[in-house]
Length: 295
Image (cartoon, rainbow, N blue to C red):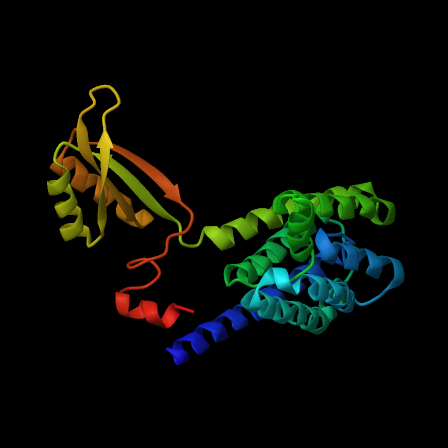
């Protein structure tokens, strides 16, 4: 059990460092040469760098220290430790990849391309960090405190903070680059969502059939997938019947449809996209692996 927990924490910390590295490449190779800004404390650090020439990583680290002191109670022990690791990993990786800023042989001309790649790299890096329960501090802590003290929603606080930083960047980098920054932030947010929620995408099927038990047996035997029987009642007839609910991998959906059509051609089927699935057959193969993953 202890070895399993240690291995799990080791994997998570490795993912945080990898995410910090990808994030830093996006900032140092694409954002800074094009003089683009960002949202959150990273955006503030970039503006300070453009204005005073200060090191981006050190500014991010410095701004996070008072936030950690004030908000450590709101994070919880595990998240606090991962946040400290994330902040230090980000500072380190920004320093190690600083040489990438000088790889451009001439002035940057395609700001849109830089904005897109900045968004992809930053989003991918943050997504990896968020996926294992880590954070890079900054606005996340501010949002939690604002939610506790003033009742503001976390999402709204983060949006307002990012909007304010990008708005201020207009006076330093100009309206055009600020608009490109909005593109980078939008792309980054979408990539974060994909990494955090979309890597385990599957298909969920809700099936209303006149022979539910026979259909459930066929799905279980031929696909080795579990099926849940839910109680339902027809809205018009008032007739009670069992409703089947099954989750399969995207490439298994055609086979599921074939089984349904063969067993009950008149079955009513609704297929849903699922963003994240955890459990036997998806994130582990058998129940014995669960104990190694538990905290």
